[in-house]
Image (spheres, rainbow, N blue to C red):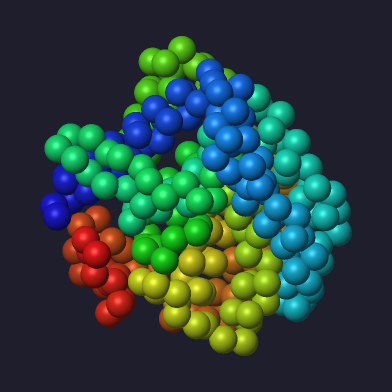
Length: 271
């Protein structure tokens, strides 16, 4: 795939997410009825929100393991659900909007595999383009020049559907990036001792990328200042310990001469 093709695919992916979100935001009762009929035992909300709550203490413990103070950060973590839900942008959240959970047909994108979906803040899906892809084995660096047009396309598609994304949208995006880091609290403790493989790369490049992208977003929006400061330290201290850590890029989007990820042996597209 060419770089232009990959960027066009990201835009199509973003527009597909936007279409799903805009459609669902007008049908809360219809979705609740279908859930009651076809999946009565499934939790109503996306799985990520529960994962954040369960990761809180592990995240604070990981900060302590790195020798970092986390005064007041616990209170900000407790505020994350209210920031995410308080913006009012609620609809069907896929919860695992990974590159291998979509298919491209002609000029359109189709999303499938809704086993972790639920009703909640749609920003959890939209911010997959910023993190990027926090639940996905097929992870690599996603350059801003590719992610930004996709995010713009998402916003434009939602607005065409009559949903205006106000200033609180950017704060919610920042909170979503923070939520995924907190949810990975146990993993942060593990990488202090071992950098194990996960899909296309290992854990340390993922952690450093997610921390860096959250701190960039928090710096722009000014929300979650305590968590912003701690995440910056959580990025810089491991990087000092692991100076050779490199986040490889997707082959079609990587800059010339930079590292590129490869698919693991068990992955066979189309199967």
